[in-house]
Length: 482
Length: 78
Image (tube, rainbow over all chains, first blue to last red):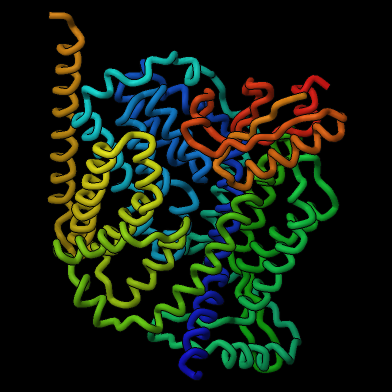
């Protein structure tokens, strides 16, 4: 009985720590950014670079951009993937898009950055971009003959022209600024500008109660729940309740609850940017530079959002709300389960299997990533758990590369669109490339000379470029009648 | 009698689109048959790059977004 309680406590503790200030400051803006990208960036502004006649040096980067900007939701990924493959730029760009979308979108990057650190997010982004284009090119090389004969439909689907309005760009940029202001751990943001002492005698007792409810072990990387954390959880519940009334029918116009929910969201961000410390006889509130940065960027978001036309901002709010409904619940459940499982895994297991940056460690991480299916973004807290349990950062990155790209579900879906032989080749390539990515990143963490790594990557890029030139040559020859 | 097809794999937006079009049909007093298309191949037969897609009498009228009730009524010819 006490064992089960212990497990539940681990889950609750993990969950509470994830709802702490630094995670909220990243997740809340990220949901709004994802919504804005889906609703405010017209798909044609990117897909027009993915038509059949587009040259390769445009279509591959465009496919990666589409993955990063348009495909936050699986609803978009499948049709866009099938469309690019059958009616557009072909197999290579479609694969690049498919590989890059789950790892290169704003939610995944922001969340990785706040949970695992900015270095991981940067490595994940760069290596996924490079290898996504690499895998796309290799697939196009392997199956070049099929590509010449695919669906001979017209290009009209990709011919639409559209551009993003200035107000939409303003909203997106100020939201990104908000995300950066909320998450960056640099001087003017972390500095304390002023402190205020509130005479709240219950604050200290409440903190003691919270620590009693959710005991934590700082040595294991656990965080516990602070007074600030409990306040934020209350605010989140209020947002949830009001958003349900205010956002569910936003397509038909805003109501009173919409504004209350949005006001609460802004309040949550501001409270998360404060630093609250319970003291003897009161609560000390520290105004950090972050509070002013968050307030300023919030004002900028509001200013630009008011210039959007009603259709646009309603669509924006709806998409953001949809992401919250779709992802947040999964995330909460996922984080809880991770906290429970963490109590069961012995650190020695992980250290033996993947404690070092070698081929075996990376391969184990990739195999685990392929066979385990975690819903959107849950791979990040899982990765955090492995890191705390002693996994080497190299294999961890290999796992982060392989897990969102490959799961049984996505393999089945890809097979339905491109057929089994191509799917098998894709899976093999992703596994191989993930292992290479893990080895590279691990070597870098272990202090290998960056110059060597840069040379290696440059050589890889050069090889791909040469292969591409050869492909082009061969296709030209094959198309010409002898 | 209208035939309304909702193209989509069953995500939140597809359910929302179905609700919006049902309400649009009801408020315009039109009789309509609603068909949900979830099979990817069948969806890709229409020219669209993102779901949800709305097909009225076999013509794709919108894709990748949720139209308002007024728009749907217009497409239904009410």
